[in-house]
Image (cartoon, rainbow, N blue to C red; front, top):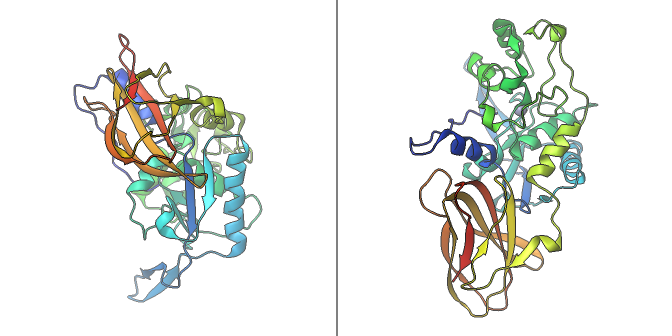
Length: 353
Ligand SMILES: [Zn+2]
């Protein structure tokens, strides 16, 4: 996982509110179509410099067999029965997820919505070794798990793992990872914020858990000989991905009409979905009301495929999510709102006008 600064909140955000924001802030609006692209141009790659002063160009392109492993991994996540969708595109400008196969660069992905801030010609995910070897689909499932917003399970502070830190650093410095001390600390030894992990229990079988050989873990004692997570997605992986990305049915959508405010009536972490069919072509304001943190995203139905139009995230701020946008008569729109946090005293509502 590339190093991304830990989010800080102003003092006005109480710890409970911060904790609820951290649980959801990297997750996608459920129902989003995530487009993925494989780098394919001869110029897609990087010049790598060696200690002896020589350099060589390493391509980001993969073989068709390697791409098939990644395609299969997307399918495997989808088959859990989630509301997110995955679609391969051959144009990087349309892709949120941009995948490289740069050998020697390790396997990694940015986490969740962080990928939106990565430049169009950069990778958001890489596979640095041969993915066609048996069992390597788990590497693809793991990196896609990051893109869906899930952190490392072996960094779950509830796991209570005590590392032999020098042994871990030495182990990961070897190929195929070739990690620096800092990278190993970031990806393994550092405990992540308890608020961003999934639930209170440790799941050593999670796809988000690395396998570890003997001699790296001091305690719990039973793992001194190593941990080998079971292949594939664990029962808890499946439960958690459905918790954030439940399957969406027609009945999950409510019509949102001008000047009618609709209470969200959902729990923190959950999402409401609305359809908007404008009666006139004009600029509209859409806003949430109530003391709350929400992320609100608008999509337009273009020939049956929902395309992102705009969004606003007011988490940790003291304003409400809102935008003004021109909508067209005869077109259909979908508005999705995920609630991070709401004040105990009040309800949160949405209105268009
Ligand atoms: Zn990882």
